[in-house]
Image (cartoon, rainbow, N blue to C red; front, side, top):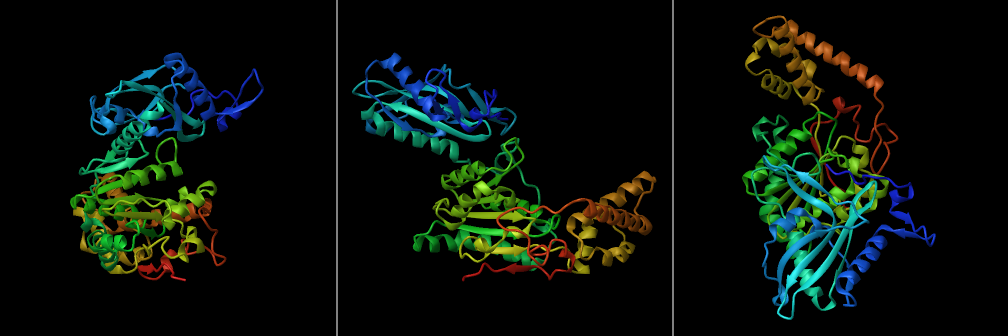
Length: 469
């Protein structure tokens, strides 16, 4: 994937600065691009006037350049002719790629380009150049030189590029922003999610009610139809599985599903959230936006921007509706700036560990599969207060132990051995691993806010209402 900078000239180049060795002045990255572009324009067009304006990074995207056909009609009776990449000593051309199917596809790119357009008054060129803003920042800065009388034509063309890049196709898999793949197909069926039925029904009905009846209500109030749900709970309680099942339900309803991933070299950055919001706003279809572990995006520099999104100042205005489904393992991120500010999160739902023996038995039987035997029910009381991930590992470990001993089935002593082994492993891990404190707020003075450490003693599945004070 992308390497934002192939060569680090100095520490100052890392923050978008470079020394002009003749004058001793420091210039910003965009200034260097503009200086180069003006010199290139003069060499190509002499004293022909131009307008220097900021440009969208989408115009350099290989996907946009390949999908906008030559002779595409534009406003003011103009049309697109072609695009040519040209050398630029200020930028090393480099592209991202994705693999949506079997073939790699080039996408986001930086470099210098000449866009050519036809017009009844005479053909004209637009000079475009873009670069990564700095070494450690995935954001792109781009400028363009346009004949002043053709600025409207360029604005129309730029909007087409934005639409191509930001509008996902409606397909039966999830559109990924970040990560190593462009799409993935969710395989978790709704019935496979073993959680309190009331919680599942509540979450599913919330999504359906929003897209069916809620969107018109938002529009009547002149609000962007953007609903925000936060799933909170200890690791392993089933939040990821629940998101995958919700994604599959949304795809069955012909909705677009967008997933923000921190799995690539850029990690968790607001750039990805911003990209996702643009995709959501331009989708043209109802959208389910999934952001897992949202707390890792709440770094100090990004707090204000995240709050603006939650407040609605930068919310995507998709007329078909957008539902944000976010998760966190660390409920201390929910401080007063979220929980006590109406509208920042419409609902906060707690996903608990296993609360009763009925649910524990159902989960153990599911993961034991054909190995399930009635005698296994004797260990069920030991699973109450544990997470679904723990039960899954107990079943898997027990089946592996039986296979290692050349047994055709898992007997009760083997299952008990598996529980004991994993319980000891978790106890050792708790002693060795410090708790992570991230997000907007610190831990509660009483411990862990919502109580990650005390999750086994928490109340049954409940919803924490966003306060209206």
